[in-house]
Length: 248
Image (cartoon, rainbow, N blue to C red; front, side, top):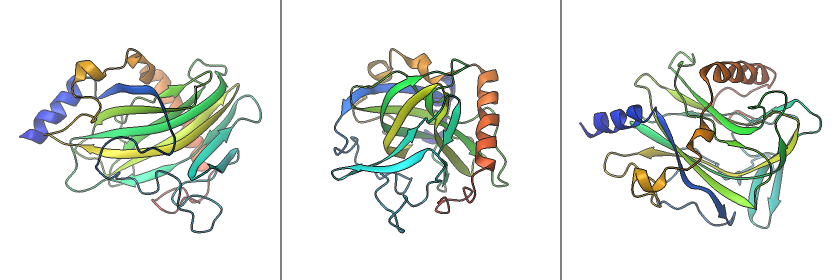
């Protein structure tokens, strides 16, 4: 019953809500608040079995693995206008499925100028797949997007519902055909939302945590479709990106 009520709560809110705690300036070496463990291994990009690239993440042209002190992060940097730099990661979902998930990000960005379309910028996209590996339409999370420059590291958080037939979640940070820019990611984490504690620790209520810029995470369905097709094209050109832990 709790699971059903929570799923209905997410669905009535449009399947996803952007909360602010974001944008919140952060120290990159401080943990994002919350005691639960992320479902996504190596979301802090610290583990690299070959010493060259973080385990589990695809390695496209234009992406580098960087560090500042003890902090490791991915850097997506545009070398020319319209370049599509997409990093891919797949998370196989736990059983039983949680009714909802939370995406937590720690990002930094500089001089991100949109490209030919308003949604050609820096963002993190995501969609669900069923057990047959087919994308579940009209499901996923609204892509948090980033433009201009941040004042250091920022935290972003998005809650979204999980379809009953979902098997995996595809997560795709991308510098998406922007005219220019640099996009750094220090944390990409996924947490289950539970019936007794569905909200982020810093967000005790929906009213207190809704971002004034909630519309930033949404775009028209037609744009989402075009965005997905571009992402699919980029993935088809990256070898070995399908399957968790095989993306480098």
